Amino acid sequence: MIVIMNITRFYQNLSTYLKPGKVLVIYGPRQVGKTTLLRNFLANCPLKYKLDSGDNIKVQQILGSQDFDLLKHYVEGYDLLAIDEAQKIANIGNSLKILIDEIPGMRIIATGSSSFELAGQVGEPLTGRKITLALYPVAQLELLNLYNPFELQEKLAQWLIFGNYPEVITTVSKNEKIIKLEEIAHSYLLKDILELERIKGAKILLDLLRLLAFQVGNEVSLNELAGSLGMDVKTVIRYLDLFEKNFVIYNLRGFSKNLRSEITRKSKYYFYDNGIRNALISNFNSLDERNDIGQLWENFLFMERKKKRSYHNIVANEYFWRTWEQQEIDLVEERGGKLFAYEFKMRKSNVKPPSQWLQAYPESVFAVINQQNYLEFIT
Image 1 (tube, rainbow, N blue to C red):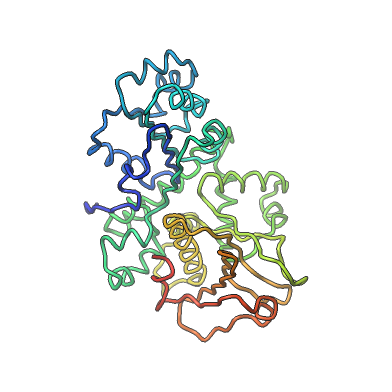
Image 2: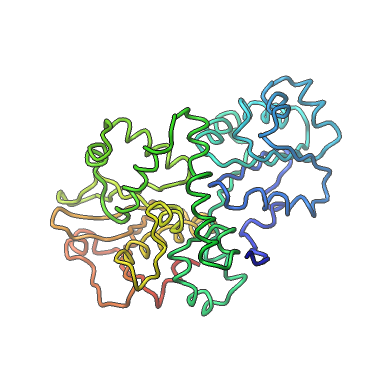
């Protein structure tokens, strides 16, 4: 059973970002609502628009041609061109550049699910000619349009276990939520990688993701991953890079400025969505039946904080911090010339900043994020 609810996205009013002579690029993971966002905007758009999909072979031929006469004829009479799944079109960046440069006042929206294709194709050709928006699984700050803070906190277990994909949120029963997540994880998550990178099978990719899912919040050894899967380290690095570019995982690096004992070589990996992480390890048990609540909490907070920074344009470098003596901090943000250190503990506790951190960075700000104060941190 699916409940019809209107989830207002942060970028609901695309007209704010749509400018003549610019390409508005909207990218993000599959199934997070890019197409819905685009169609909802076009439904009330006063401009005369043309909507096409990169899945269409004829559209691929036209927009991949870089033939100005053909392109001009294709958009003649329209104020706005909207291309969904633009990453499917070869040389799309060059063709969009031609349209923007040669047709005064032209507006273009292009959506795409795989950044390694879309960003690679539109990045250099559209330098100075594009506005880029990243759309994620539904953020807690967006859900405040549906629920008040009390109601949002009441549903915390749901967000930790089933995540925030729109279809999952709007599905009522647990079994149907699981079916949706399994479908996303196994049918959509790796689709672009398998299509565009010509990797023969998904099994080795899923095995690697499962290993990462069990190590959320921990430093990851590439050699150990390679050894566990029977592959070379270079292949592991390549696959991890593809996962990052395809919005499956996020790589967090270690922070170091002063102490020799700080660890910086290894990385921690977070999943863009808790539900996908749980689908990969086939664990949708309730919180009181789990031994990984700390990992769920850390992954949830990290990604929700990332969404907040992205949507509110909070510019920051982000790291984790750990020493050889096992002193650690979950998240360090470097913004405005200052350091902000955050430790994630689901239950309220009297956690003090590590002594080595205080000694090395006495001017930094330290805070523990728990169930009592987390909404302020992520909304």
